Amino acid sequence: MSEQQQQGYFGEFGGSFIPPELQEVMDYLSEQFNKYKDDPEFKNELNYYLKEYVGRENPLTFAEQLTKEWGGAKVYLKREDLNHTGAHKINNVVGQILLAKRMGAKRIIAETGAGQHGVATATACAMFNMDCVIYMGAEDTRRQALNVFRMELLGAKVVAVTKGQARLKDAVDEALNDLVQNYKNTFYLLGSAVGPHPFPTMVKHFQSIISEESKRQILEKEGKLPDAVLACVGGGSNAIGAFAHYLDEPSVRLIGVEPDQAATLTYGVPSVIHGFKCLVLLDEEGNPKPTYSIAAGLDYPGIGPEHSHLKVNGRAEYVTVSNEEVLAAFQELSRTEGIIPALESAHAVAHAKKLAPTMSKDQVIIINLSGRGDKDVEQVFEMLKNDQKA
Image (cartoon, rainbow, N blue to C red; front, side, top):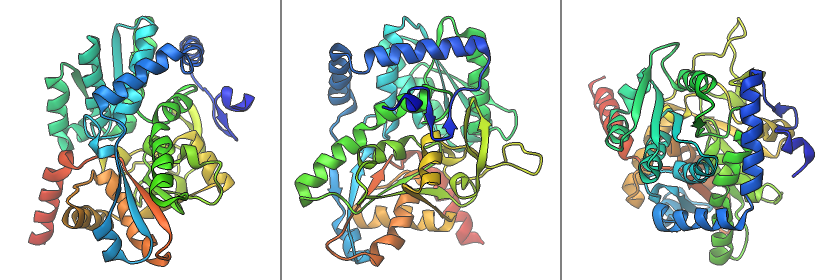
């Protein structure tokens, strides 16, 4: 890793723009992360829980029916939806909670949008007997009521944040406020590849298991690297995990897919949000712009600093899809492959549907299926019912 990345920068993005007392906490966290991430005992424990508790390694499934229906490239699905708790979030949570344990933390706080990170955090806190507080926008608690119940069932206290838009950005604000007040006994288990250094680097490290596995699996199945890897992008954790081991493979296209109403990488400008610099959607006053996505986990006006850098230097491509395309993809994957995806993941499926027919039959794409759709079926049911009425 370059010295610049060690300081938390990816090109001009990243860094740490926080109060001095919080900077001391981040410096200590960075020191502990660097101490343990390559420690054999830590790695053995992490690998044990990833295998025996999370259920890794998960399959790289050939989507035979979808491939036939779309024509063109062979389509593979990296099945993060099969992880315990139903999404990629648990990979990072297990890594960070093992670190928190070594740092002597007794209280864990986290933010969540769609609720999957909150559920994963509450799950791990139950397993390791730690106090758990989850901040969630009040609007998201309504959209993801089932996940709120899951978190509470697992013993977490869920705090509904009513400030601002009452969404993910506001939940992050409150979690950071909590950390400032309670940093001596509290570990902030951040769920996405955002925030002040070392969080983006740390989250990428724990999520890179996705591409570590998919690269090995696709070489076994096809004898070559994929031509493209697609992932949805909100804060960017599943995408950076899906991209990580292909960053140095220039033949592999890396494509991040955003909601068209929260298209940070498409329309964002460099700015500081939540203690780090990234591309941000700003309003005319220079404040973070209100965003909306039918997928609560993608509803964020900023983006991970490494994604900002990959966009600016051209290594990755970032595209948008509409809510209508996402709903169609959600239903199509369910109907053709018997896999109900998370609404977040359906964004990547929606763009793959447009991309695959433009490619040849000997080409290969991997869609990172970041989560399963159990949490979304009630919301989609209501939306489709309302569409039929209209």
